[in-house]
Image 1 (cartoon, helix red, strand yellow):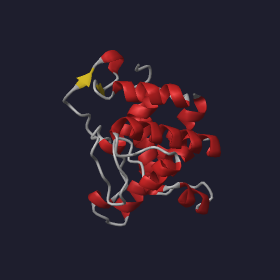
Image 2 (image 1 turned 90 degrees about the vertical axis):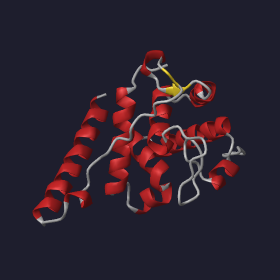
Image 3 (image 1 turned 135 degrees about the vertical axis):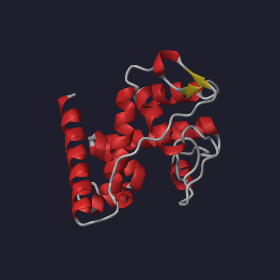
Image 4 (image 1 turned 90 degrees about the horizontal axis):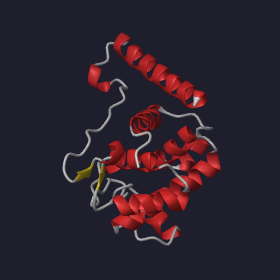
Length: 180
């Protein structure tokens, strides 16, 4: 717990330093690095212990959490940040679904990322692999977002985009602690 708080403090400090430095250079505010939390979806939510999973998707998230040993609140936080629970979400890089899984990643896991339940399972299994690989939540989350190659090339140093993503997920995850 203390490690996580320390990491959050470091990430927040770096983000604030970058924002202040950008302001000191006369950079406009919209160009500064400021973490942003996405809005929570409003329709079809189940309010079971503050866990905002659409009721039709709850079994998929519970199964994925059970299968991987990850906290349900962590998977929910990733889904909120990645897709805002939109099963048909698609990124410009072709990441798909609720947990924005790349088709190649799904294929390597032998799961169809275009099916919502399998997308959640693929994302959870991939995140589990990254946690096992890096043994640090912040690096695993950053690798989930920008890819492990980027993290490895940077020597485990998170860039501003990676820091924002990790901060957003960890803030949501913390707010959802204990959700089931």
